[in-house]
Length: 305
Image 1 (cartoon, rainbow, N blue to C red):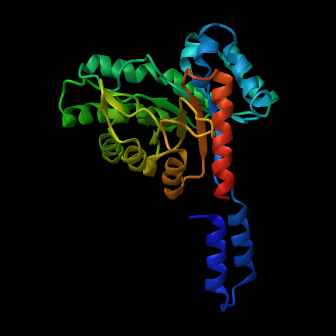
Image 2 (tube, rainbow, N blue to C red):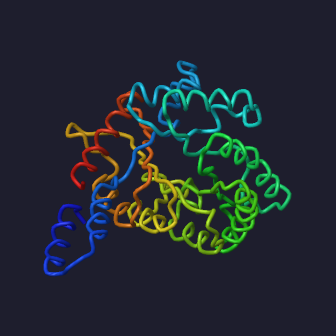
Image 3 (tube, rainbow, N blue to C red):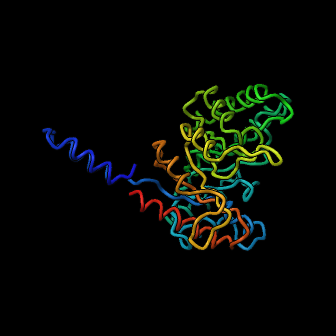
């Protein structure tokens, strides 16, 4: 619902009622609440980072100086050997503090499958994430993003049970650190919104959640899950949102995803946290892709504020 319309309709409805003074201040504070906030995912600059044109530490300052964004989402691939390097983590923390940038989460890859059918490999994958949960807590993040993939050859229910076992064990560890373990739709059955939401319900823990990605809904090969249906199914559990983008038309609209429709789903779920820009295309430079995504999100924000 458009916020102006909500306030107008509410005023009409309450026009004849006598309300305490506190109520008017309550509505005033609600009206001023930010619709959603914008962050930048480090993967948006993966080509620049992999080619060493910029360094991981540069990403933190670039978010603020180049794009005016004050919150970031790290990717462990760009500081993979530094999870337990307290000196390096202190540098990250200092950079963030110096530029008044908030560290939100660490996206964790290449640490094994939390739903691996081999028990030893599954437990090893769980343990591999411990260092990232500890790093996230040190940096002041609220979450680590993890993958809940299993063996695609197994049945729907078998994969669900295996992923639930691995993720539950990890969440128990994260909980003691006051860190969330959030799952992104990231291939396999994790890109099936129904399956991933069922996983959330099965675990049913306040420290587990989702990171709905606008674009990652390819289950395998050319089998796609409806992205709008998927995001709607994942939003009740969302602790972060990834605004995936690839290409923009001359009017500034994303070609693959109807951002207005997608953000309507996000906002209708009552979410007003960070929406992270994750540009992954090759039609624009990474810098231009980020700017275009940022401009579109700001436009939608203005239209609905």
